Structures are given as C-alpha cells and as structure tokens.
Length: 380
Ligand SMILES: Nc1ncnc2c1ncn2[C@@H]1O[C@H](COP(=O)(O)OP(=O)(O)OP(=O)(O)O)[C@@H](O)[C@H]1O
Ligand SMILES: [Mg+2]
Image (cartoon, rainbow, N blue to C red; front, side, top):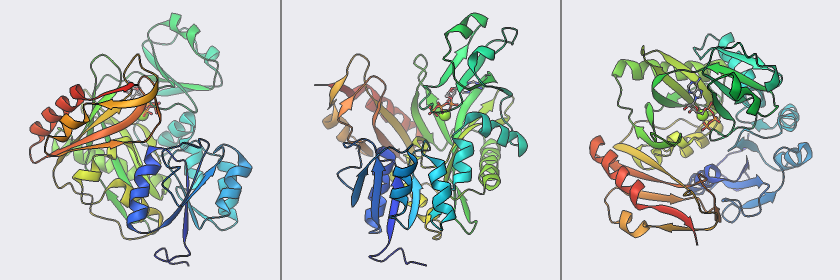
C-alpha cells in the first residue's frame, strides 16, 4: 500500500465546488497531491489544486479516465457517474464513499427504501414513476420530492391540495407525509475503512421564518441531552447500516413528540459541519481525509460554541459578485468569513458562510444575527 504522506500519492476528488475548496485547505496541510474534476473551468477549486481536470461528472468515460490517474477517489457532490465508480472499484481503486452507497443516496426513493429495510425511522412515503401518477385522493398537505438531482430544496415542494399536483414536473418522485417538526437537526458521522467511527455533536438548523432557507446552523443544538444522544445514536446506526467510509451527514426532524426521524443523508462533508473549521478540534474536512485514508479519526468535540451564517445571493441581483459589509464584521471578535470564490451571484446561491465562535452560545447567536444583517451579497 502506498504511503499517503509521500510524494507519489494522488488523491482524486469528483467535484470542485466550495466543499472541495475547503477540503483543499486540509490536503495542503497534509501535503497531499490533489486532482479535481469539475465541468466548470472557473469552479472554486480550479486555481488552487495541484491538478484541475475539466469534465462532466455524469459522463462514464470522463469519470473513469480521471479515476485511472489517482490512488484514492472521493467526492464532494453525490451526482456523479456511479457505473464508472463501480468499474474503477472492480479494477482495484479505493472509492470512498463506496459506489454502492452513492447509488442508494443519489436516489431519494432508494434512500427511503433503505431506511425502511434497516428500521431507520423516517417519514412515511410513497414512490412514483412519474408525478402524474400521484392520486388526487391522497391526504394533504404532503411533501413532493423529485427522486434525483434536487439540491438546496430545489426538488422539494409542499403540496397543499390536489390542485397543486398539476404544477409538478413529470419526473420520478416520492411523496412524504408532512412532518410538523419542532427542530431540524443534523449529525455528522465519520467512519474509516477499519470501521472506527466518531460522531460530531448535534447541530440545529434554524430556518428563516418566511423564506424557507436555513439561516443559522447552531452547534451544539439547544435541545435536551437525551434527545441529542438519541439523534447521535440514530446517525451512527445509519452510517453502520451503509457500511459507509468517509463522512456521512444525517439530516433529521425532531417531532412534536420528541421522536427523531431521519430526513435524508449526504455522503460527504456538509453545510451543517462548516462551524467545525473554527469551533472543533478536528474540522469536518480534515476528518473526511482521515476517514477515506483510513487514518485514526480526530477529536470531534467543540472548543467553543459555534454559529454558522450562510451567505447567499441577495434577491434581485445577478452577475459579477461583490460582498458588502466585510470590514464591519471583521471588527467583531470570533467572526470568520469564508468566501467560496464563485464569480457570479444569483438569488439564494450559496456564495460563502461566516462562522461566529464564542464561549457563550447566546452571544454567538446574537453576533450571528448582526453578521446576517450587515453582509449583503450583490452584483456590481
Ligand atoms: N416530510 C417532510 N415534512 C416536513 N418538511 C419537510 C419534509 N421533507 C422535507 N422537508 C423540508 O424541506 C427541506 C428540504 O428537503 P430535503 O432535505 O429532503 O431536500 P434537499 O433538496 O436535499 O434539500 P437540501 O439540499 O437543502 O438538503 C427540509 O430541510 C425540510 O425543511
Ligand atoms: Mg436536505
């Protein structure tokens, strides 16, 4: 086996967005030669990795040929050609997360079936070949989700009545019972090839009251200890059920009755773990590297309370981006902005985030609100 800490080891990453970019900070720390594949020549990783390859992540030959040039292959986005990954794995390449896992997670219907099969509590659902097959006699409201290629809620709609059914795109989909949850929580689990696991603390996703977008990610979640333990246990059992290698982010609902339901999982570093760069002993990005390289996992405890604010493009602005208000937030102790390096802004596009750390959670949460009000992501 190759030594990772040597000049002849190459790591390959499918996807060159912000998650890849933050991973590169850690590959540089460990001096790991990293090759990135992305279809966009200006992707956030394009100028800062050892090798940038431009190509389509869904194309068999592009992914296969890229994989042939590296020693371990990982992803920063799950929408990739899994057939190519299966072939590479057959030919002896280590692919983490494994193609078997990606194949299930890529498809919301298969993912829900997997939860059911493994007795992982989740909202009741139905699968449909196409939206027009959804019966009008269903109980409403319900949640419609496209089976594939949704992200940041783009493939999710709340259906209030049978009338709303006619506006749905004709794609394979699932419908779910609408859960009136108290909280949305997430837990990141790290698992390496030897089966060593570590769980990060439970985070809470606080939503904007009107716009249906996560506004703050709060660590630790302001919930009861026993609920937190239940959520962590649940997340761990999901990672074990998948036999997953790498990071697995488990999104959950805390119901009115304090039950925990798994909403969905992401087989990678995740928005809900960005706080860890500043607040944890081991950031999620370093932990992902440790997991896929089968190294000992790092301490997942937090050093301080952390609140993350997503920086998304303001409504009404598209084009070359400019960030307003950076100087004023940099004046506040414990505030660290991260800008993803995307050239153009669009309404609600994830352009960056800001982490606020503080010994006191309430202080951190208040500063986060100030940050949110101060920064504007607009076009020039
Ligand atoms: N069954 C449900 N009941 C109530 N709300 C739901 C349900 N399913 C999803 N939602 C809401 O819709 C949001 C997006 O759903 P989901 O996480 O499944 O989709 P997604 O496209 O993967 O989104 P993202 O990329 O933002 O994680 C959830 O975070 C939650 O707020
Ligand atoms: Mg989600």
